[in-house]
Image 1: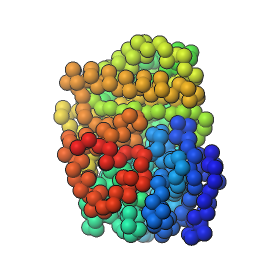
Image 2: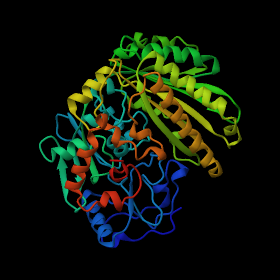
Image 3: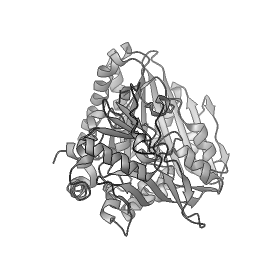
Image 4: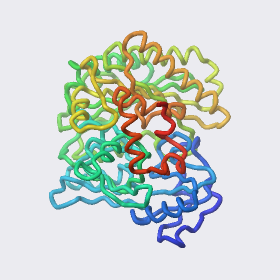
Length: 477
């Protein structure tokens, strides 16, 4: 809980924040900042940053706070700048081909505006997630097969640089910075607005389903068929996000699956292998916009609450063998570590989303530091092992277990020739923060990112005064 709120608004017009506005999503990120400041404009961000620089005061920047990495969007004994007051959502002009999104928005806010015109963007799959975090980490959307990373569809960034300058970064102005921000995280400045291209989505079929343990094998087999280039994922309108869940207290295994299909086909052939599986609950239907689906498919643990959260990520090449290896490793590690059942109310998840060949081509056409390539022509399969629990005394055991799971999967994937050297930043573990950027573009992007950071932030404000999260300075050379 915040102990005090320094009245930076005596120098600026920014709003003081009550503690409800700065609570983190994950209780692993609960800290005690010395001050909370909520600028209401880009100019106030610049003014606040100038004060912080003069005082040589450490700070963190938070939008919706859904990154469960301690220090990424929270700070002890420093200033917490919350951007939730930067919440405008408006079209750039009457054509409505570009929407300008204040950095403090959630995707829910954005979709509510777009739904009025049957439009969409490559935004987050869950409404409570913040705009800034998703886009600065690359971002996966329900439309990625057509449009690449979410960040590939940003046409302009409004950003406050370390020297207090408010500038634009796009293909014509500051084009090197424009490139770096498409996955380069919070290393170059404070983005105050994102301008994204829009596209028409008049109908969207989809929803979610729950299954008991008997459906694990059928769901895994369905995804093994879906994830290959000749499978259902070859239809760019189709999207599948299965999650296998293990309750460490009860030992219960279950499955939660999100399916989406762009269009009004009530029975998409690309997803038939999934919809044929008997479920305990499902709500698949056609909606006129994506908004209705985003409202109804938010996992319960995506709301701010009293639980502790953790992600850990790695990647394999996309093929049936990879799908089976991911799941076998997950179950093997649970069986080999019975001590995790002594934790309090731990739920472990195993989720994967194929980055299709068409998605990779779209990202390559746009250009970004992540630099995907497609070694087998089947795409890439990022994996996220997730966990949520309630008791801080279990943190060390759970963090170590997740690191062991990732290490074991990486070792098995390398032995099988299935490993792909990518950690999806938005799902990375605290122990992986130094490994992200050295993997970008097959190892070639890091020197360029460092050159750009030096050009726009020669005093390393965003490396040293914002000490947490994913920093270039922490990446091995």
